[in-house]
Amino acid sequence: MRKVSVVVVLFLSLSLWAQQATQLVPASAPAAAGASSERSPSFSDRFPRYRLQSGDSFDVLFEFVPELNQSKVTVQPDGFVTLKNVGDVHVTGLTVPELVTQVRTAYDRILQNAALTIVLKDFEKPYFIADGQVGHPGKYELRGDTTVTSALAMAGGLLDSAKHSQVVLFRKVSDSMFETKVLNVKKMHNQRDLSEDVQLRPGDVVYVPKSTFSKIEHYIPRANVQAFTPNL
Image 1 (cartoon, rainbow, N blue to C red):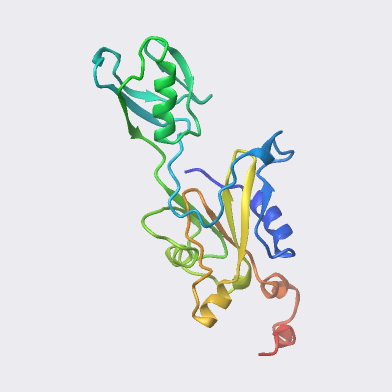
Image 2 (spheres, rainbow, N blue to C red):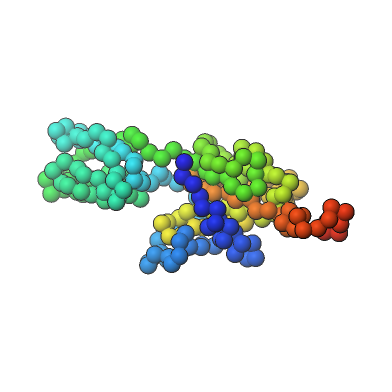
């Protein structure tokens, strides 16, 4: 299981709560040079294409030159694969259509406009991570149309200590950047309006912080709890 650093999540979420807006934040510091020019998909992208990563594998099938076929070509940790007669080709981050173009280009020196098919064999199954003040923090398989509120339900719901109004959604858009959004789940439930309930994408992290009350609960007598309860 790929774990998310709680320290990073807490650091980023604290900086976000004061701003209450969607923005880009570094996935690591300092950010990689040229990160500003990288593609930054918005939260409205509902059906993103899968992008290859290290450990994935695929078959390469040539329609008219079967002797060049390869099975389970594996993406190495450095992002390269080794293809027959052409050597190493970098493929990490490519979609399958982009991979087909990349492989066809690599073979252009020995084949003109090669007719080929790429079939993914082993790849990272879509998932999301729920962390913080939820019943069962962890990594969950992402199936079908899953939103933030449905993801929270899958993770056992919100604890009493959760800050419902500042649920943070982290979305990795490059090796150096996360896109972030703060969602008021409490408002969605109270108004019965899920129009702002964001559709999850593979790799998203939903983080639920502690409420202010839960943070100071250990430092005050229980008899005085009512003094910290907002007027309803």
